[in-house]
Length: 190
Image 1 (spheres, helix red, strand yellow):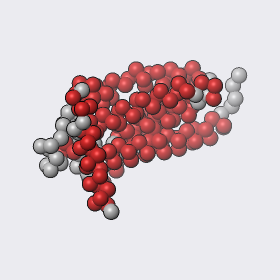
Image 2: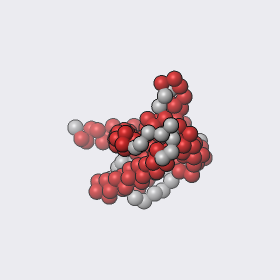
Image 3: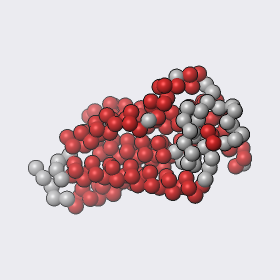
Image 4: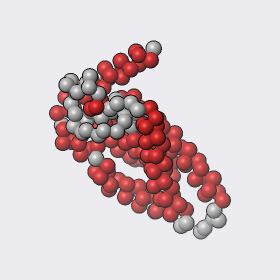
């Protein structure tokens, strides 16, 4: 069964990586760059600052950065223990895939997916308001494109991205719950 799942993962990777989406190379290279999303990070911090009163807004902003760092640390620990080759480093795939980036570390799970989903879920839970919840879903465009770009650029398999997203969502929810406990212990301000 494990072999079948790996075969499906490779087939799905080939389908996405060799699709017509790969012809938009500059878009995917730009979308996969962390720096491209800096304005969104700044928007997240601004919205957190505006939504919550001091001192909680500062705690929320620091917690967002800490969540990203912890998620990245857990990702790197996992990558170094699992040691799954990235598609762009797999000798069996080199001649058959589109490679737009060439990182040399390991693949499982995607740090881009994990961190982007963790931060997005965490921030959205902190900002959530029933009256205007529709526009919050737009923030998920970022992690979806960011994660998907990793397949198109040839550096992650779909399972890397899927597991990374699931880990990120889980960590985002966990961090929110922990921060909620902290918020309940802070003195209320007018």
